Image (tube, rainbow over all chains, first blue to last red; front, side, top):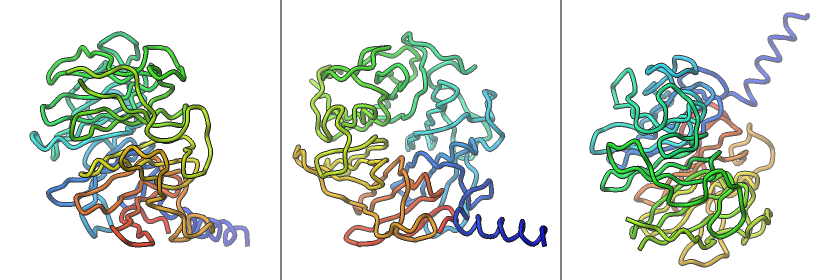
Length: 212
Length: 118
């Protein structure tokens, strides 16, 4: 009777959270999505599985694209990956590693990452070359990189190939409500004029910063 | 390239979380479509909000059609990200239900496109 009850519990709990797990049709807290405009393939950061999965259109199972080797800082591992974007020019993904305080580039088909910005060894900081809890990363058509540096309450801008950024929104280390401040910025987007949009999560608003 | 460091609020109201069409509650992922419409994963409100033309009243692009929990196809819980394609189909990272959902342009319900969760 006890054995049957525990089996029943596993079956019942899977019916309600059938998607929770490590299999290739499961997630543990999916957090970010990037869509390949050429194919419709979805790249999804599967944060607590420390991996990125790719789902082709109509696929039941995903394929493992990045990570999946447990949380960590070596170059085959991710560490609570969150926001990600697809760089079509290099056929690679840029991934914000929230718990490793860096942004890494993982080429499609590769087995390891290269560092983009932040400390490859995972240390956090608040100067121009470090990050603290990055949650999102996007590119513009010139290859410039924008990162929501959440725990530093700022958005960092990096020219391609550089590791020292400039703050284009927010004030480092200041969680505030004013028009020039942010409080746990989460995600970032650009419109066709390259105006910057930031989801300012703890302030329950989305802010727009005009480019000039 | 430079940006004005004084921002304007294009969705929600500072420090006022709520569930009306002018408020947000812990907005997370955002994305713009090709018309510069703004989509927001309005996480605690379990919905995707859409804002256009600088108007501070949004519409709900992806709503809940069920309150029965993750086992129901029409439910979503704590969505943390949103995507949109060139056809204006909306992808929702339904984080709390361990799946990704698709709301096709013009449809009134969503389908699961990744993750087993029902």
